[in-house]
Length: 68
Ligand SMILES: [Zn+2]
Image (tube, rainbow, N blue to C red; front, side):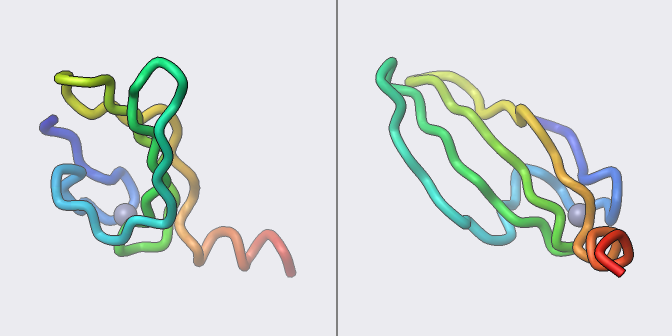
């Protein structure tokens, strides 16, 4: 995985913070991680496969701006 966060440029291989992890029925690992900028990512890793990022949220700063 060579991608970077589009918001802050953090390398996706270096997980900043794991929010939650769970194993799905087909034995792939689904995890929510938070980037250094506060953006949430949903990652999926099938057994023996590389991690892929399914969705990526906005940075925290953007979300607080939306709430106001
Ligand atoms: Zn980021």
